[in-house]
Image 1 (cartoon, rainbow, N blue to C red):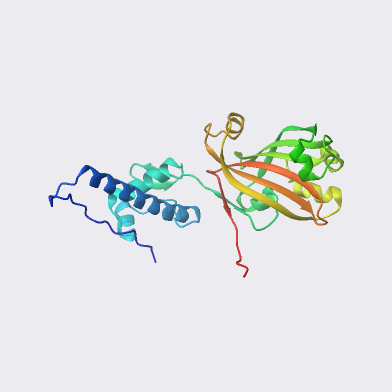
Image 2 (image 1 turned 120 degrees about the vertical axis):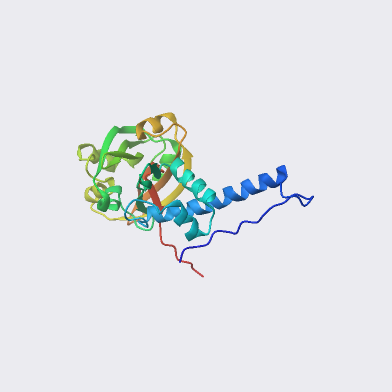
Length: 266
C-alpha cells in the first residue's frame, strides 16, 4: 500500500478574499517544501532498494495519484533527488535512476571487499604506508606506549573502478610490520590481520557521522570540496580483546548506504 501524502489546506487572507497574503504565501511554500521532502524520502527508499527495477520512475501524474500529492510537489521532490545525483530527467524517456548506492551493513564485522562482494570488485590504492610515532589518542586506544611507533596506512578504495572510500588506518607496529610485504591492493586488512596473528577478530567499536570533505579528501575521492561524506571511526579488537586496528574511513555519501538490524532489550 502506498503511503498518502499530507492533505493540502487552502489558505485565505483575514479579509476573506481569495488572494493570499504574503504570510499565507510563505506558509503555502513551506508546506509544499515539507511535502516535497517527505515524498523525496519515500521515493529515495524505493529507488535505493530496487523499487524501480526497470530503472525508470513512474510518470509524474502517476506518482501524484499514488501519493495523493500535487504535480508541483512531485516535481519538487524529483528536483531534490536530481540535486542528490540519484535521478535524471531524459527527454522522451522520463525520470531515470542514474546512481546506485551500495549497502554496507553495520551488524557484522567484515572488511569492505567481504561486505560488497556481490556488487563488484573492490581494489585498494595504497597512497601512504609506513611506521609513524603514535599520536597520543591513537596510542591510548591501541594500548601502545606513548610515543611508540604504529603502522600508518592510507588507502583509496574503489568499487568497480569508482572511488568509494578513503581509509586512514593505525596498527600496532609489532603486528603491522608483517603487513609491509602483504598484498594490500587486493586484500582486506581484516583478513591479513587474522592470518598474521593466527587469531580471529572479535568485535569493533564504531562511530558514524557526517563531516565535510576537506580539500585532500575531496580531491582523492573525486568529490566536490566541502561535500558531506560519511565518516566511520572503527576500533577493532581481536577475540581476546586486544585492539589491533584503528580506522578513520571517509565514504562518499552518494555511493554508500549504511544499514543494520537493531534489537530492543528490556
